[in-house]
Image (cartoon, rainbow, N blue to C red; front, side):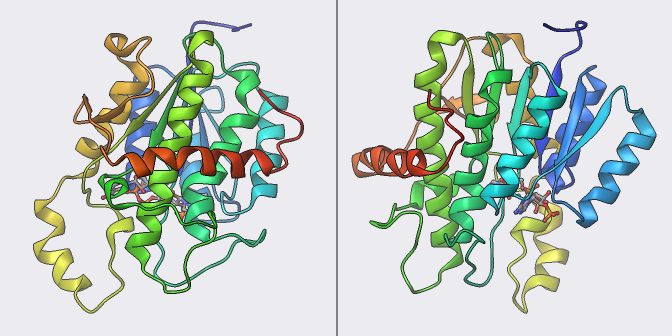
Length: 283
Ligand SMILES: NC(=O)c1ccc[n+]([C@@H]2O[C@H](COP(=O)([O-])OP(=O)(O)OC[C@H]3O[C@@H](n4cnc5c(N)ncnc54)[C@H](OP(=O)(O)O)[C@@H]3O)[C@@H](O)[C@H]2O)c1
């Protein structure tokens, strides 16, 4: 049962370029907000400063490292312990790595942080979602270049950061479509957002060209408030009540890739997800 009329929202990657904007906009709109950040990270400083600024009645913190499925499970348990419902879940955290990395559970890093971690978190906290709850998953235009490898979530030996990022965002899109269809009857919406190319830390190339990009590229591309605006729209706007399973950009639904082979990969990604230990939360 809701204790008052304030909406409760959770934002992952709350300390990131887009996460900060989204969180501040949701607070401005009157939401009670849970900021999720990596444990012990620099981001925790930001979260604590938000608690001091807006007060514990409005802001709380949930530590979660999306690269560890165990951390995701613990965070979900902690959240279910503290909260009785969630109106808005924004799976915003994401990474674009620059070297091959494997997670503690042995999977390719992008596929866990950008897909399996947030999908597992959403799945585990489903008991907090109900009619009217909105889940917003942050993907990217890069999903259109994604291919799901045969041994998902492992990737081919050769490391290409953009391929791995694209694969993880496509996999996240496919899982979002599946959750949207599973939960539609219950009135829980699951939509995806492509924020565009935005001036935030994630777009760093880790190459000599970065200082030049800082001067000539970053100032002219989309800035964080505009990048965050479609997410905030999907979280709050009455016009999207009941809309689910759609990909949005600039506050409008856009088409999914028409490549059927990608859509056919949905079953392989989802079947893998179901093999993970979700503490009996089969739904
Ligand atoms: N900026 C763009 O051009 C663009 C374009 C398309 C899509 N996106 C997507 O937009 C979302 C937000 O990115 P952004 O642009 O705001 O980039 P950002 O400033 O780099 O923020 C990324 C956020 O994700 C968090 N994160 C990374 N790895 C994590 C992990 N293992 N566990 C928990 N949190 C983790 C980061 O936390 P730390 O600070 O601790 O690393 C940070 O808060 C991402 O999903 C990204 O893929 C961005």
